[in-house]
Length: 421
Image (cartoon, rainbow, N blue to C red; front, side, top):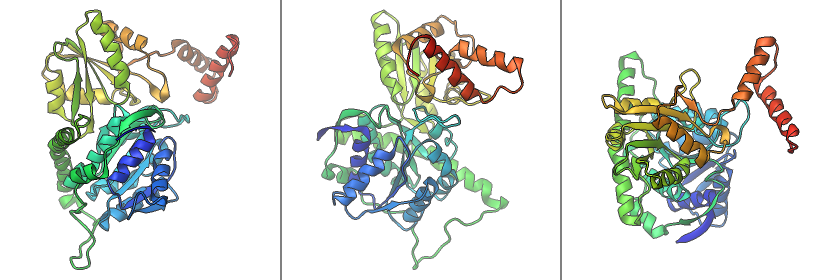
């Protein structure tokens, strides 16, 4: 059914259609509207046979989800940014125990400094945690991927993060096709846990493992994640067949049929990238887009196949790894090793900074001309702010916190232009 909804409402309705039996709720922007709407659906009786639990922290939210899943319940929670970091110990425990919890991460920058806007630094910080990570380009994909997430998680007993860009998607009102309960029930079977606490068959969950078997435990965790790749792909195809739209899988391609240059990215920025590529195509540039849907496990073979015929790939990063710069680019580099594909890394949109078509087109042209000399390249970096701060640090030892200094610089600049602070 077509509905005009906020992204968070669409996700809440999709999760409710999956019949969760326990929802663990703790608010943090920009995911709060998701759990609020699920609470409303429970109170109104539209989501039945579900225990909605208000917890005291994000750590508690994941801990309760773990307990619920071990007891045999279909469990769900949501978080963002520092909330995800606060629950990290339990995040690793959940995957280590092989529990099929589904969690929405409404992507938001990690502080300090405090920033509530969107980038991918939160979920990507957990890339090694053993959770499958699916990234949404649109709110329709956010709806669809949550339904697929429960199916994937429960089939292979691995937890799944569905990552959707905070505010850009969570707070945007769009038309979404919300499936019926009957459609979701036909696609998502009742939860049958692979492991569950049962007095008739007692065993220890969360046992200590010594050096004699710890390597083997970790190997099996890695192997199970790699075994998830064909499952993610198959479930995406089955969803497309049943619901008439492609929204899952491993990667997507756009105007790649004869592309000599590809832009590689994930999340909502793909929409702006596609608009930019359309304009460049109209001007005769052979450029296309490859969107990554499944970030973890990383689908090396699918990425290699999608990019094998291009001369250059420009990877758009929505986070930065201090000391190396690149995160996503390292995975792409591994997937493309041995191929004659030039690679450029562009860091864009950190902390919610707008990414415009003009800036993207400019950096794509520079990449094609071989004019990008630094790796990674920071899109729209304000060199004057950097220079001013470095000058201060060179002149005095006690310059105060960098965030405060740069805020003062920005305020002075706005005042000089007669703008409001």
